[in-house]
Length: 276
Image 1 (cartoon, helix red, strand yellow):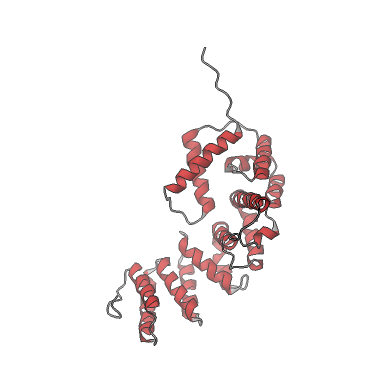
Image 2: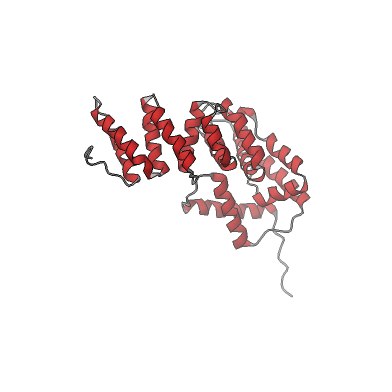
């Protein structure tokens, strides 16, 4: 008789996924949003490993509680099954880890071990809320983006990218109304250009921001974003801007190179304006 295999316990399963995810990241798979990337990775892992026990939804809630309390990785599969058992209870559990003090914290500063654990809990709950409850997560982003310091990069980036992910169809509204102040709107445009979201209406808004910019550094930044967005229609306006840059004294060669590069990305020519 064949020797009976010992059962696979959750910790072993999660550690296997963590190792798989680390290897997946090391391959440099491009993706603009961490939640989307991890979701794709988990789907691939499940297909390849086929090692998940037939946990009941209630068991999934218990696993979710245990893993979050420890600040450890939670499979999206587990969180979704937990939500199927009790959606409101699962959502409430996730939100308990999204503490206000962590939202406004500078995550680059040194912190003590208990805070590190809370940060791990926060990051995991944040990811799960984005994927399992996208509508609630989008509203969470809308609520908190105006309240947090934008100079603290980690949380604002996560919120903006999450907003692009979960409220894609409302981006035009966010960029043309007073829902957010201009700093947030510029940040959204920045991450928009990193994303795969492309619409003529959004390109038109980005171009208008560039044309209307009064601050020199902001205008330069938006000019670079026009190159990143990838619409060749921006070549003409960027060439005109480059002409104005080369006439300025003192000449800012770095800015000229950036705009020349943006024009080149779009398939345009700049050599007749300047030689690099």
